Length: 411
Image (cartoon, rainbow, N blue to C red; front, side, top):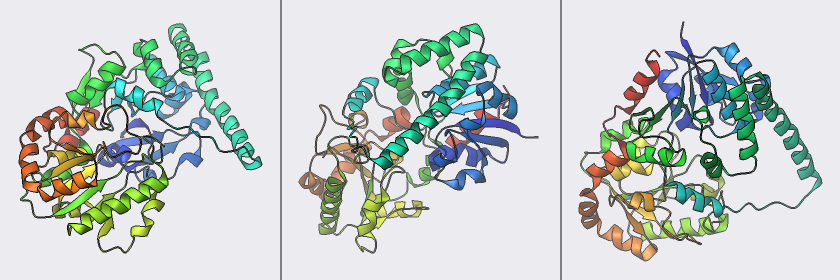
């Protein structure tokens, strides 16, 4: 009989599903993140496990009693229900893990970035009133899970959950982590990409130097490691997008994004280069529709890795997907510091510190760098080995095996 594992995180995202894809034949996965089925937008999760909803459980203890997991894996421990489940696991001696899922910057950087979010509200209407009423009802149902967990917890854990609720409802997640210093909010073990990226968690969550952590590299990039030493054949450009206009940060809007994409396509076309665009999972895909059928631009979807051989330059902002391309000896990487309303420091400073990539400030700057590929390849190449060590731990195609070993080990 296979061991049961609960996976807590947005299983609509393919990268969050990776651990279940790797291990679903050896472990029984149960996914939970949403109150009800309205949260499920990608049914691929049903191929790898069972989907659960918070509304179907009276408390975290009733969830654990039904599933009887041997391990619980979190991508975040931030929401009320995340914290309730983590506490219940500690009460019932069920091991918990925090699994890394993306590049992390400094805490100070995220605090500054959080202040730039534009939370515009739509004008009130009858329809929005109905939606808001439904949201209130859903919020009540969701909160019930947390409240019941409090009531069923031992005294120490009960007092912690009450304290967390009072602090979190009035503060950002960053401020909450600063105000609450308790192992009850932390996983038993972190599974992190690399020591350099783990420093974010050490800083944010005030972890001691000896807090349990296992480094694995980045499993979703194991297949890309095959391209790192291959002779450079392609002469084209890959742009790795991020949902900046969807999140209304740095002044990005949909119209400005469309204008930017046109300028980018014009820049590469003028240089007789083909432009590949890889959208982020949270990007509004409608923005790319006008490029369908364009002979100079390709929007990458599905299985796109076969295009890697055609590319020698990669552009982006700060996406985790940039990391394997920065690591490749035969690729140059430029980070686009061309925001309508830039912050006080470069958005990509965390990656620029590695010196294995460089910032681009405008399209003239980009054209010049694309025309001088060999020079920048030599400059960036001097720092790629150090980049791999700091940001990726190892780029050897074996990160998935290291992850499997950790999760299949008997506790």
